[in-house]
Amino acid sequence: MVSITGFFFLGALGAAAVRLELLTPKLDLLSADGYNRAFTLHGVVMVWFFLIPSIPTVFGNFLIPLMIGARDLAFPRLNLLSWYIYVLGGLFTAYVLVAGGVETGWTLYTPLSTKYAPGHTVMAAAAIFVVGFSSILTGLNFIVTIHTLRAPGMTWFRLPIFVWSHYATSVILVLATPVLAMALILLALERALGIGVFDPDLGGDPLLWQHLFWFYSHPAVYIMILPSMGVVTELVTTFSRKRVFGYEFVAFASIAIAIIGFLVWGHHMFVAGQSMYASMVFSFLSFLVAAPSAVKVYNWTATLYKGQLDLRAPLLYAMGFIGLFVFGGLTGLILASLALDVHAHGTAFVVAHFHYIMVGGAVSAYLGALHCWWPKMTGRLYSEFWGRISALLIFFGFNITFFPQYILGWLGMPRRYHSYPPEFLSWEVLSSAGAVMLGVGYLLPLVYLLWSLFYGPRAPANPWGATGLEWRVPSPPPKHNFDEIPVVTWKAYDYPPAREEQG
Image 1 (cartoon, helix red, strand yellow):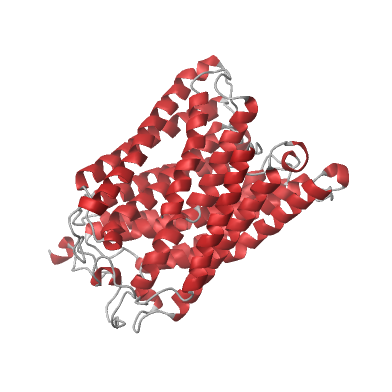
Image 2 (cartoon, helix red, strand yellow):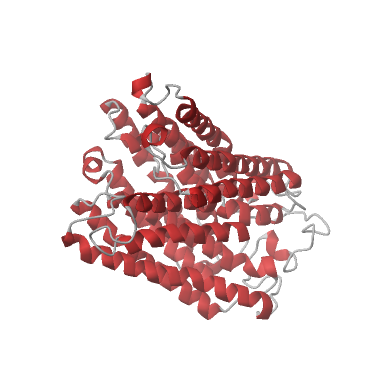
């Protein structure tokens, strides 16, 4: 958690540099290369060093053994090794930053990355390559743990949805990450040795990089969002005091998202020259993957309906997630439409869509998880007032930051450009003003959670009245979680009947 928080703020510095530059239509704060390096730093750090590892490595490592009634993960030493590898990848990234950066964007598109970009592209690729092994080890650990260490009576359909979502995520991590690793090796070999894989002058194909990269990176979107969905399910059921509506459908929706997520990578390439027939298939599949996501949203809404809602900070983050995720998902359907994508591709519209899912969604869920399980992890309670303030600041600050980018993109503002026509100025200034509010919202939890470590009231074992196994041990849990392995005889989310059922 400490490592990931450090990288989050490092990535935020890149975003701050970009927003400051875009306060004026002309280039006047950074150089052109400096601007490219700022948004590349932001993308690389946020995707691979925060969004992908955040919920699995912080909350998955802590909660999965507790939730299934195990004393620890199956391979504790492998777990520690995954953190050392993560830090090693981070050191590579820090070297790239100090040595001058890289200007290719986080997607490392060829032939820019293999032939023309002057920055430290191979070292950046090495950083991503190394940190990928951390993800693979985490995924393997979770799969083995969930299969082999469940407590007696903890059947598959008594597992919390949080565990289901991490199981689906782990399958993606183990299957998709090696593809990216091989692509990065090929990129480094071409840049260093001049072998012709992606460079057409050497007999290569630059579109091959896009296929390899997005075959990993679109499932990676679900690596980021599936754990978030698991968190939101836990928060919704806990703070509405109701069993998850349609538990089985929500569980299978996680698996369906993981499977279909492997089949949609080509929607990033509608304007790249791929076959029109391939584009039609990818468009259809991109619409199809929205179905299991919609199942989750409907079921969250049905769970909240007539629930005994307790509007504490974790639930506010969860409700913010639902709103932002739905809007980001609907605009994703615009980008999945062949004709509309031709207009919106490569514009700020795509930036807004991606951030509504990843930042509005995944970061909100991460903070919701932090506020829900902070008392369990630390044994301390935080200020509920400031927790609610930060949740509201982040929701409104996020919308003020990124909704204008939908409008800018639809008006034709390309992404990654440091200069723009003066008529776009008011929207860019509004976006930068929202980023300030968003930054304050992100800094606040750092302050009051650290304060709670030293001065917060002691937390009881179950401050929220939840039903999961993790709330049946003291806060913080003993070293090996359980003195005796529990025997599970009840359903998941075994809350009393809801009020409408009682009446």
